[in-house]
Image (cartoon, rainbow, N blue to C red):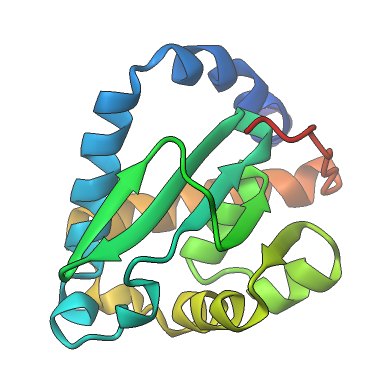
Length: 173
């Protein structure tokens, strides 16, 4: 019974969260995202590993949640915006992006399955994809790492139980 409930939550959770997330003011989303990204990438920023994003915009879209953010680096600081002309775009469903972040799915695999869509500047997209591949979970702050791993385990088990149905929501940005 728990397995069936988990599978339903994983499959339908994003649609249930779509409205409350859409009602969340962008200023709050921006503050949380910049804090989390700055926290996660502080070493990479300090070492110049994200210089490829300097004055260039990465669009990140979570299709099934109807969310979209634009990320850049300016003077060694990650910035988030709600509307920019992107140089490269990454889009996927929430469950897939969670699995990528937790290193439980390979971005290349999802790309070739058309579950992760990358559009725009090919070279910049490759840099971003390589950055995704290079993220080491042990460098992540413990509360973030533990929460992400638990959420990814929940999603992974729910997808297995639910038959891994992946819908293609229309673009929202």
